Length: 292
Image 1 (cartoon, rainbow, N blue to C red):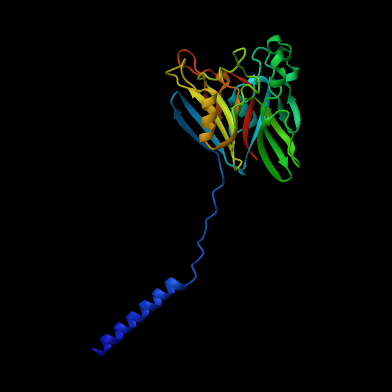
Image 2 (image 1 turned 180 degrees about the horizontal axis):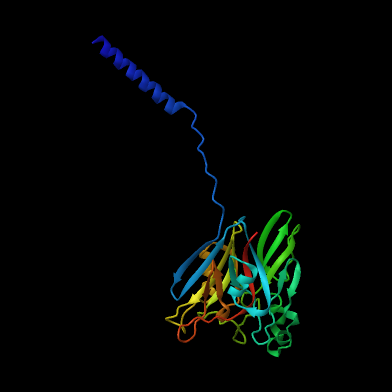
């Protein structure tokens, strides 16, 4: 009996020591595995009248988003092959007749495309009263700020931040976020009923956005082949959609038949013809996504 009591006391003592150690000792520091490298995320969203193809390029990742220009218009797939890019999105406006740019393009601190050199733009009497606005539209910029890379969306005439140098830029417009600036950028004139982009009508559209943490969002909204004359997205709806994706700033890019996105070996086109077939129009300029 005495042995049984002794064993019981020993068991209780051991249990109390174990309980004390578990509840009073300093918690161990968990081992944190190395985070996987930040990479591009592609996903689709089905909208009421369209299908959105979305690329998210995380901030501080190994990927850069930069413009590229072709002397002759090219498809996004051809741009991707030439530049060995992971992804390509059509970007600036151009005149399909003379194939000259109507958007500014700056690459590696050099102006490589100037809309003021496009005679069909600057000498068009119908656009004379809007020309100053056309030449000061929204543009997507990349800055070098010391050792820091920074993206922004501002009007073309905006000054660069103190301590930063403009490396790349491409203009298009209008700005979608923080506000939709159709009239300010000369796309809409309510007095004359001008609406250069059919802003309130559904159409294939493309856009670029920047989140609060500096991530880049590339979006191409495609029409539905089953509804070629009544599908796509309006510009106000596109602005709202970019906001739902987390963009603080966003701007519209060339849309309609130019809408096209290349990613990971596959090409998506936005505009369809009357029979629902994809329209594959070559473009003048694009945004490249490449490894840094």
